[in-house]
Each structure stands twice: as structure tokens, then as C-alpha cells.
Length: 159
Image (cartoon, rainbow, N blue to C red; front, top):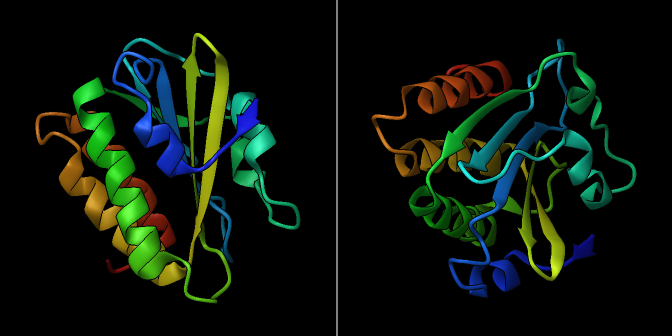
């Protein structure tokens, strides 16, 4: 796995990003486990271990080890806005010197090999990212909307 920036992954052409996935893991304080989410394009079903090289040392990724990982498929058309919004939210509010609350990892399995990036969001950034992702996922993707809402309500009660 080659670690890179999200910006670099966004510069790959669409055919190289067809086999892509994004993972949302709550890494902040919690009183009970909060399910990890994997959003994968129709062309790719990654293993949760594929994201492991992107982990930031010192953070707890125990939610990735739960017996059930929530996942849903997205179209390649939905992928670009998801990645762009993650970068936008991170640049505008996600990295304000607070403790990390949410890990957003993305991997691309292109002919050159797997590349990936991780962005860490503060609590406020995690809330903003979840709100943005709800708008980026097609309204007809009922499973995706429900899974995002479940994590959002568990991690960020009342948002």
C-alpha cells in the first residue's frame, strides 16, 4: 500500500478510481461501540484489513474489529463528491487542533497497486462531514442513507 494524500487520489482519472472504497471509523471518546462504515464502489469489495496501513499511531481503531462492519455500495459517480466533500470539510473545519473523533480513510486499487489516504476529523468536523455525506449519497440509496444516519446518531447524538 502506498500512503498518499486525498488530493493525489482525486487527481487520478475516473477509470483508475473505479475500484475504490472509503471507511468511516469513530476514533474519539465513546461509551459503547460505534459501527465502522465501508462505502465501496460496485466494482470493489475490500477487506477491512486493506485500510490498516493508513491507521494513525496512538488512536483506537477497535470499532474496526467489531464482529459486524456496516457497508453499502456507491456508484463511481457518487464517489467523487464524497472524496471532494471530505477534503473540503477537512480543510475548512475538520483539523482544528482538537482530539480526533472520526477517521475517514479511502483506498484506490488501481493497476499500479493500492493507494490510500486518511483524514482525521475533530468532533465538529465529524458532524460536518456526516452532514455533507448525507447530501452526497443519492437519496435513492436508502441503505447508504440509513447506515450513515445510524453512525451519525451513535457518535454525534442530536445531530
